[in-house]
Image (cartoon, rainbow, N blue to C red; front, top):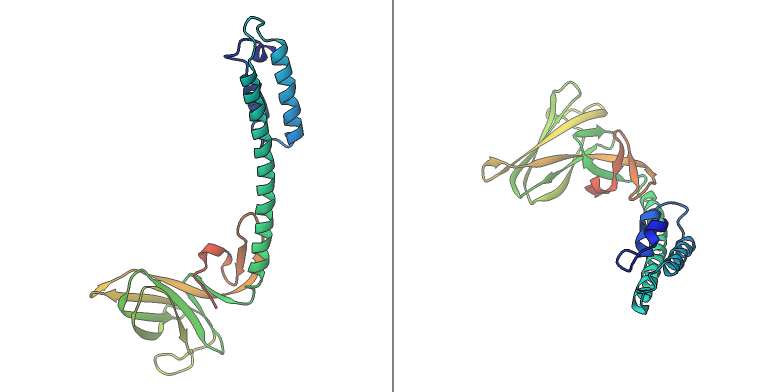
Length: 228
């Protein structure tokens, strides 16, 4: 420590030594604004005691170093304020997400659950399509229903299945799967299948909360394409 403090103006800067030892204002738990200021003043006093009598520090240099510690203290207080704001924001997002419990959301997937009320699925088109077709299959891979949805614009779309097979018979309730094909300019265009799943719960955490989706586990908020 004595070597770092002693010397001429070119090498004696208590703020530099302070930054290296503290590891930044937001570093260790023991680094608080008051403790940082005390260490700085101790280093500055030691520097003044050990300065070269023939080449002493001028007022401008002292003022500059005092301004640096004020800046560090201000940054430390700003970090603490931002951390509180982030914590409050996370809590607010969790509360808002709790209102989604019980709703149905479209997320990436090809499953469709058939109940007494019917079934629902969705898809996302990367560009407008002239003809969109949905094919629903049972757990054994057998096709039970085909539907043509016609021309659709780009974006997220949903569809409903009344549970009837192509033969006009009511399919048994349970888990099915579906695929979507789309044509644009006579050529196959990109389309992503979206499963319609119930939101059963919310799991708070750092950043945006995650949603507990029936059948797939947890899903990030930004993975939700549409909510009903």
